[in-house]
Amino acid sequence: MSVQERKQREQADRERLIVATARELAEQQGWDAVTTRRLAERIEYSQPVLYSHFRGKREIIGAVAIEGAAEMAAALRAATSAMGGPYTRVTALARTYLDFAERNPAVYDAMFQLDGGLTFANEDTPEPLKDAFAALLESLGEVAGDGVHPGLFTEVFWASLHGLATLTRAGRLPPGDAERRVELLVDRLAVV
Image 1 (tube, rainbow, N blue to C red):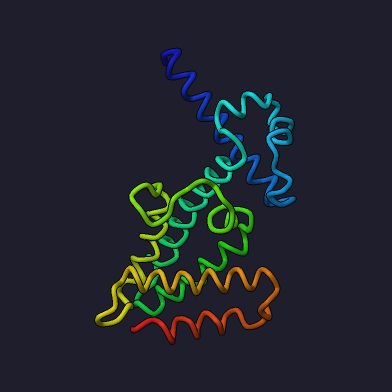
Image 2 (tube, rainbow, N blue to C red):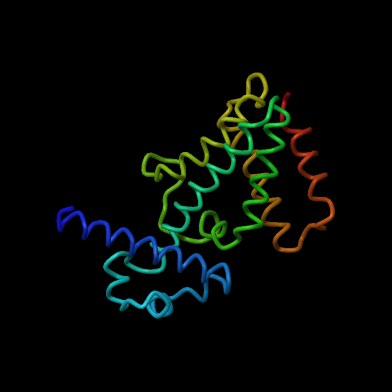
């Protein structure tokens, strides 16, 4: 291995460590607790080392969002690939999405609530974000219904899932009806 390759590997390892530590701290104490000073202390590097990888917290949030999008896409595909028909695939997709949001609140916030400096729904959108949407579209496109644009239907269904995830987490919806909400969403929106 050349010196250049070793340096690149070390740099990538440091970036992964910074992102993992920020994610862990955010999940434990919230995003307000994530500061470059605290990250530097936890990973035992100086703040200038952190700034050599990320210009600040905003970029770290963006890196967590990109990582989370890749994880969500993989989880959605894993959950839906084992299902037989469209109804069971869409139900599995909805449950998996809501479960991901519940199990990873700080990552979910990085993806959809916080400013990570990422662009959505245009040419500059990072590939993992596009892929997460594609993972939704793969199952939802087939149940959009006649004359309904699959991408538009996916946006509406995704917005519904996001609303359920956000309102449930905020304590605005009773927790005992989560499964009935998923069934209602799939029954009313998906054309199977």
